[in-house]
Image (spheres, rainbow, N blue to C red):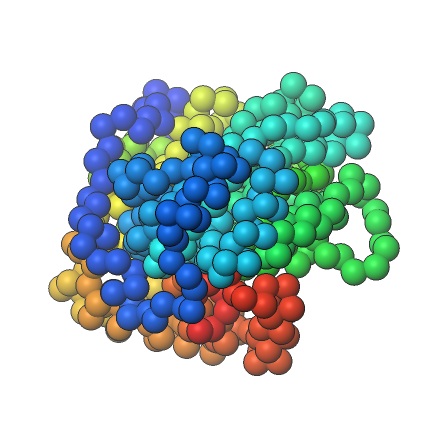
Length: 509
Ligand code: FAD
Ligand code: ZN
């Protein structure tokens, strides 16, 4: 067993190819025809339509950062997975909080609906308009304001790209507390608006914990200053938390203060092959016990997911053979020999007890990037299958993978290209992909509400990290109690009485 493991370890060094986006073609036919409002039969809210007078006002305010060219607007109207499509003819690109404030004040007075957009990598249809809402793009609010090496507090505008912030922090020995496959495109304001989770939530917690303060502009144009760089501030209501995860329905996040942890000196990665899901769970428990404080990520994927990376994207399987399940376990710490010893001891124990069949272990940054790509690029690779129904759910670990079995029994498999399950095992967060050659309303009807009922029965959540957006508004009640939804509606009414901010999203219609 051990020899096999070591052999694999050498092999991965030679075999894994570079992570490259080159040559990837997407099957993008799915959203070409249908507007969201048509496909999902949505009724337009009582909002005004954009007129030339409105456009003149915005031109005076923003100059050529007022985009009306239909071709340029097109990209802002379609989401990353090509699942939803809006019909907005106006994109505004403010550079300051004052400009955001002027825009919202004007839109509120004139009953113009607004769809905030950052990197447009959201996966629940929240970041593009449903009808002709004005798109407020945050891309140009991208200044880093301050970095405090001692406290770890980073202050920046909401439009900074996550990866750019992480690279900036490297110079200070710090890192961003979140990391996700979309890091090269998503913006920190979008991350906060969705309360994004990602690959290391297990170690660094969620954004309610990491965000120290923020500035947001409410629907009437008021700039709400909740900026703060203190780790501890227990003065009154924690208003920043209202905006974290509110998906653009309560205000536009314009500035952020975030606590950034120290960048670890030593990182190691194990990629393991297993033959059943019970062993995946036992291996996770062992990892928690053996790796304790250095465990920074615990991901799992099934073989259908490996198929996306290997067969669709052409990435190399880090192991010799295909297995039913794979785990990716990362450690981060400050003492390379101590961390390496711990990970090796854990893997040896897992092999001795026959939990894992095969595995590879590396601390080499290039090889780790290559192995991570096999997991991180799944979201991108599955689009090559055709149309993807994507779900992001929390389930108690004993039921975690049972959902995939239930779907295989339920769905008409002759119309399905692939069902795959993967995700952040350490956070009990399963991602499900059901791929069809093209958008298939019959399969959607077999999936929903069945999948959400399954989750509700098992006391899970219909959204672990991607949010509710447009796609899940009808299923909020499967996780949230009616009393909580009612209070959410009251808060929305109080903060945005004309409902101009991201209508048709989050709250039940
Ligand atoms: P957008 O998609 O532009 O917007 C998301 C939502 O926030 C929309 O409702 C929008 O209206 C609102 N919004 C945007 N900016 C603001 C603002 N400044 N103020 C108020 N509201 C705003 N998500 C995870 O949680 N974990 C993952 O591991 C993960 N992996 C991913 C991997 C890939 C390959 C992809 C494509 C996506 C992944 N996602 C993941 C989903 C997505 O990247 C996150 O939800 C991300 O936080 C969205 O950021 P964004 O800048 O793209 O925001
Ligand atoms: Zn995820």
